[in-house]
Length: 392
Image 1 (cartoon, rainbow, N blue to C red):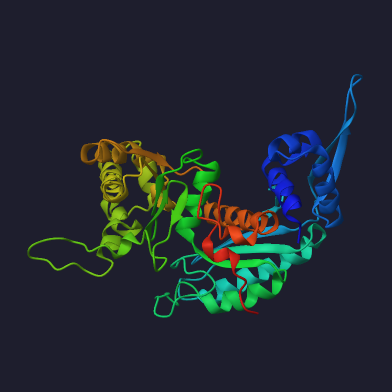
Image 2 (image 1 turned 60 degrees about the vertical axis):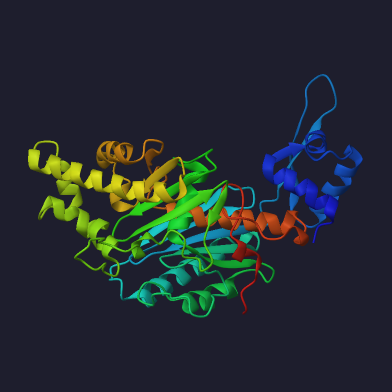
């Protein structure tokens, strides 16, 4: 492992992507001779390489250093009910591979999805071997964010995700000192939105997923909130309806505000047909407005609990711009101090967010002292589960 001085320089290089010795000296506050010594060590470890020499007619030429292209890579993989999406990045952050595979099976064929995910990862390991070891993998799954050591008694729906099967297939692909973690898919999408999407540059926000299922993710002061059991944001479990003469139903809120419940406003029309019809048909237009208003209700529920300032709407229904105006109007009626935006990252948000968490973790493992503890959740940090290596 790098010495403390080399770790400091490497951390600065991860931030800058590429830099000269004087620039690294300024960034770290150490002398140029010390930076030179650290760079020689990092070069010997295969982590850093000189990229090119620049200079003009006046002054000495300067060597620009960067992360070695074969220093390793990371993988984010989104294992959904009907799809597998992957994003691979090198340690400089460049995308090496990105793909999405739709699966022609239902939710109850979760083992087939897991096998697809493992096979996809295995193919990438073979394809990207020139980039060095696979240093971290984060899997975004439709389950609680419980990490590699799931607490006994924490429920995981076996129809939605096979934790043990995915772990058994993935861990042999990862470097011996690498990291493996399970993360909730909505949490990963929230991280992606904070990195390059509608919440970029914002350190406190909520992400609201509305599709076949509903869920929320919370980023507070730059940290992804998971809760004691990894179940923070599982709004599908909120009691609904609340009525003096009706008992709340299990998952009643999801039935009311998930895709099936919302699209009932449009009668027999599917989502795309409803949106197309709303351009010419008053009934369809009113149905779109009612759906948007319901999204505003759900956003108000989240905003009332955590006061995030910004709620990003994602998921197959939530991210449609056609619903935004009515949702924002309704949210403003109920909560006048929260902004609403639609998600910008798109269908690979889960994999993108997982890759971001994996990259932060791999970099941290190489550039920070173990005594500094695990990284926090979002906006420049990683999942606390990621520092622990899964048992082989």
